[in-house]
Amino acid sequence: MKFRRQRKDELALNLTPLIDVVFLLLIFFMVSTSFTSETQLAVNLPQADGSPASNSPRQLNLMISADGQFRLNGERVDSTAQAVRTALRQQAGQRRDLPLTIAADGNAAHRHVVTALDAAHTLGFQRLSIAAQSLQPEPELDDGQ
Image (cartoon, rainbow, N blue to C red):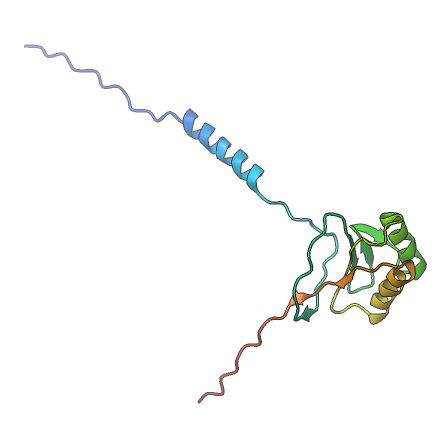
C-alpha cells in the first residue's frame, strides 16, 4: 500500500510587517524627541547657589568662552566693547526689557565679563542674569574611624 506523503509547507517568517512597525516606531521617536539648543561654544559654567531664572520666549544669550570668544545667540561677536554693544543693539532693536543672560566660562578672564556687563549697562538692559551651574554638594571625607 502506497501512502502519499503529506506536503509540509515550509515555515517562513514574513518580515514585511515587522519592518513596517520598526519604521513607525522610528518615526514616532523622531517626532517625540525634544530638541535642545546646541551651542558652538563649550562653556564650563562656574557653580553658584540660587534659583534658576525663568526662560523667556525671546531672550538674548551672550556666551563667553575661556579663550575670550563672544557669541550672541550663536553668532560670533568681536571681543571689543563697541562690537558687543553693536551686536546687542542689532539683536534687541529698541527693546531694552528683553532678558539678557551672560554665560561666561569659569576660566574666562574677568575683563571679558566686565566688557559684557558694561555693554549691557551702557545700552540700558534691565533684566540681566549670569548663568551658573547648580552648586554640587561636596563629598564627605571619611577619616578612617
